[in-house]
Image (tube, rainbow, N blue to C red; front, side, top):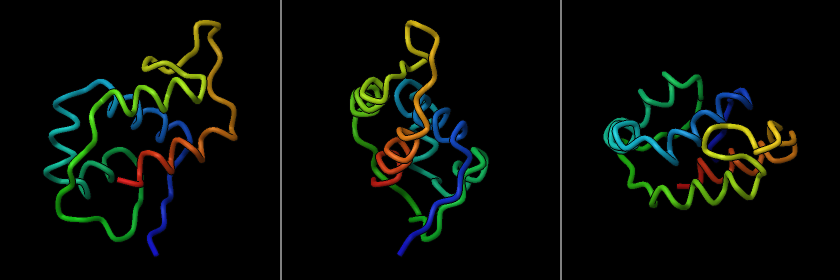
Length: 94
């Protein structure tokens, strides 16, 4: 079973990049272990390469957690701590 260790802010920044940054997404698909390490995310059993779903999937997940791709809601709030687990799960299920 895989395990994940990451700071909630690192997960949020990771999700934002997955939702917006084509170069980051391409690098992650080619070399997930190095990209995750650079993001401060430890994940056991990292595959050699991955195929990500479209950016819209990550944008929708961020919106459902009450956060935009910039990291804040229109009111300037960050996601509730209960949503970090959802964001982490969503980010790492692929």
